[in-house]
Image (cartoon, rainbow, N blue to C red; front, side):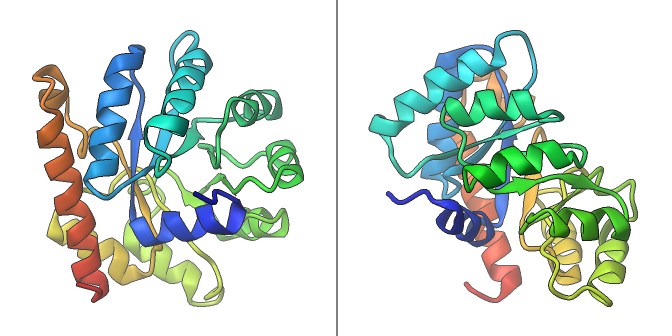
Amino acid sequence: MVKDRMAVLTALMDQGVIPVFYHPDVEVCKNVIQACADGGAPCIEFTNRGDFASHVFYEVTRYFDKADPRVIMGVGSIVDAPTAGIYIANGAKFVVGPILNADVAKVCNRRKIPYSPGCGSASEISYAEELGCEIVKVFPGSSVGGPDFVKAVLGPMPWTRIMPTGGVDPDEASVKKWFGAGIVAAGMGSKLITQELLDAKDYAGISKKVRETVDLIKKVRGKA
């Protein structure tokens, strides 16, 4: 499967929901990510949290390279260029961060890796686009103004592609508000991959929840 910059950006937007997940156990990660892929969301944002997170990422990415090439592993919570470089070397196909860092953008651009930095104002979004970011992350989504903020930005800047994290829930009311405002995708974490499902090791349940969310977004977009 081709996983160059353009293919990855298209896959992120087509998928609509980006599961955001981290677990220190490699086997749990494999099961959860496979469940997401089977549910129609093979683009995964693995958050850079916890000790030796990059080692877990490496093992998981290597596994899926052969086990299920549909899976596109990205990394989140990146705040500096050296960490971005480590994850890119370990197979990350897209990089997401809670903040905007120009050095991270340069590292990603050199390798044609999509970078979605966290932005909370029109000025930050514009600067991110100047640095070559095709999809910007609005973070924290609900705190910076929610769907109204998205609408306000897209008025004078209709070319902007926004992917919020924080505040987008996997239910019809939330999806309608956000996608109706004009976002191209949304990151979802614990509301999508719930602690209850994880504790029960209910991977079929995770797959079902992801499938329902992917289908709901398609319906709201008018693609179903």
